[in-house]
Image (cartoon, rainbow, N blue to C red; front, side):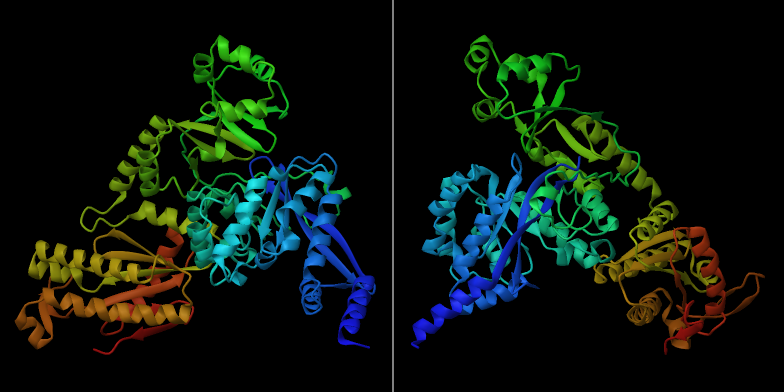
Length: 586
């Protein structure tokens, strides 16, 4: 038997024993639970046994059958799609297959025509972008599919070593970007994952792509996606496992994640007008005449539009009404795009964007008079002037809560931060920092020198927080008492860092003593009984305890530990869970 005959026999045997079926995992709109898309996922049986897809494609690659298997998967995904489904169909494909003549866009168009699917509802999901060797060739291929009307999606952004380069090269072409389950799953318990998701989300939205968060399995991660990242689309086992077409057709999903932010600008709940793509423009005009508010959301197929009814009334004259009255809405939207504003393009309010600095930049950079926030399946419109007022109140509140000497946050901010850290779902630590013998120093050297010493402590602690890259929150509770709230640092590493901080404080505060006092190693001052005695120079006491949402509880436990630390000569760190006092050598 020749080599070619052997290969043909192996191919026939492989294809003869291979069974392929399609399941669909829903992609969910996080406002109202609508299924806006289905990702087609192929399932393989070989000789009657389930086999992972990656193994099937490895064997297919060895037999030069990848294109045949890929085409079969695409055809099955279109054929088994629930009849009448109006959302997007996401089809996985590999970058090197896109350039294959067998995957030419025309073939896919013929399949779509055969199963009566609009290419504008089909998203080619480019998987394994790390395999892209020639980005220019990939872009040329994608240009072809875009001309046919297909949508494009990059899968697992941020995982492959060159996925960001691919993103940059495909700017302006992408309709969707999927952020990987490796980052989404567990993001509520990982500051690193959260920060990466935030950066990738902002980058994706800035290039005009809709972001889909994959791998949502737990409510705490869903809350983070909705409340912190302002996410609108997600998929994962929290909503549904992949299902056969006949089961996913009747799937109903509820999403009811509330905002964590309090005292928000009230805003107005928007009415949602649901119409079919083929609905006539005249019927739309009649429907809006019954609405009392200025703004309405038009849900047209899988898209949402914000419509200013005042602008609509004054901009559409008799000539336009007569011209478009009997035309389908899907055509009118394209011709009158200035009146139909895609809701996703309106600035979105999230817990993250309501932070003072982010909100300030959002207000000065947006030319829209309104912002949108989503909560519990409802859409709220907040006018810009209300947000300006809200920003002013927040700024005033923050300034009032800061210590006038160090400009560090005070007790109220510490309490809020402790609650936030607790709600974030992670263990955290609280460290009290107290200057030893500060009253005696203040009496001996004067209040000005005392104020300068406290300012110096604030600077050193703030520098420490910056080195810890956002893992430390510094507060000044008054006088010479400071508090550090710390998370995402293993306790062994944290103890080492705090001992080094203790040394830095001790060395930094020596500059406030006279040369004579530094030379003899002590200064003379009055104790609490007004008696003169010798005091050591620049010693600091710290107490490290497990964090809790109640700062009163933290304060009580730290007070007990501080007394133990102060009983030791020199600077000392008392650690609650170790039940020991750690000191530094002078």
